[in-house]
Amino acid sequence: MTRSTGQKATAGKPRRQSSMADRVYEALKDDIFEFRLIPGDKFSEGDVATRLSASRTPVREALYRLQREGHMDVLFRSGWQVKPLDFQMVEELYDLRITLERAAMHKICSHSTPPPILRQLNAIWHPDHPSERAIGSTARALDESFHCELVAAASNREMTRIHQEVTDRLRIIRRLDFTRADRVDATYNEHAEILDAISNNQPGAAAEKLTAHIRTSQAAVREITMEKIREAARAHQQNKTTS
Image (cartoon, rainbow, N blue to C red):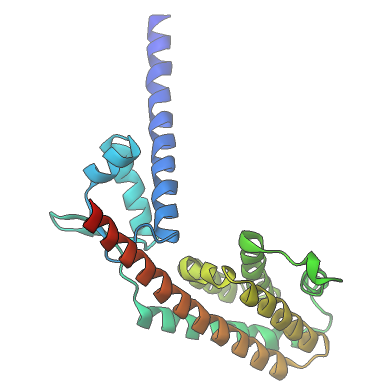
């Protein structure tokens, strides 16, 4: 009986540790996404452990997970750093995304029958009244789904896989496009126009409208990102001055 109890306690320990690592991961990721930690910020595992009341093992596990996702850099003998934004890489990812999505427009329109997903997308992006439009995180999730579903509808598994990888890598900055009401409104209007062009079997028009839509979003995201970084940097400096 004693042995069995000991085994259960030992078996439970990794689960508790994993749960703490998940909590640390979510807290740090939220700090990065909300610019409480800004690109270039440096800190140690001990700093995080103290702030989040956690031991170093789950903190280290969470940090390595964030590193694998491209949000953190580990620095030799000097702790961790929030990965600086590489705008050249972002530009290249947007170029790749546009190439894939333009190709998807042509492949969708070449199908003998429209993909069933188009009916669902039309229902979402052609609401009967503006009050039915989603906002915030819901609009963000619907936007990502719109682009991913269109690429998946092209029925090319490798194209879909690569596009999903690009989507994952751009998510941290793309989400900023839905922090302003005017950008949400523009997204609804532009998505509807893309779907109309597809419905009318106009792949060229669909591709051009999609390209303009993504480029406009890209410019807005860059502007908002720089604004957020400047605001966070000013807040950091004020905190240092008052402390």
